[in-house]
Length: 208
Image (cartoon, rainbow, N blue to C red; front, top):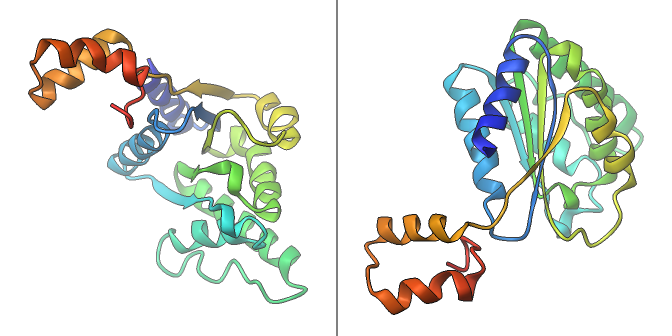
């Protein structure tokens, strides 16, 4: 189901209708894997892919996430778009947005941010600005965050998810049948271990 939803969003973006996908779920339930899957599928289609990961220790670093996105782009195309020189934040964010829109004019663009809850405020605001125009620009934004959220996220709840083409994608724990499949792949056949696996882990892939 989750992969089908991702494919639908990718197909819409390929047709020129971008949007925002918010991947949510408890720690260890496969959010990063879904982001990686989106990256692999977009890369396989020849898209431009920009990626970044938020970090708690860098939350106060202006342009931390935008800097990662710029560095992950085609060589030389976005490298000069982000500067942390004092007084240059506004110019940097404007340059970044213009560079991404130029990329989108020549083909679909996927922007992925894992651990979105740790992204710095300047980057979050700029990504919101990009997301507002993504529906008409062939830009798909995929954001992943852990639940439960430690702090309210009004920017996300009141802005991003109200945009046309935006939706939530929940990374849920594995069902008992899903646990059995994973155990089969791992070659674990002992009866007591299999019966306890789902009960002890709740279907969390990382714990399993």
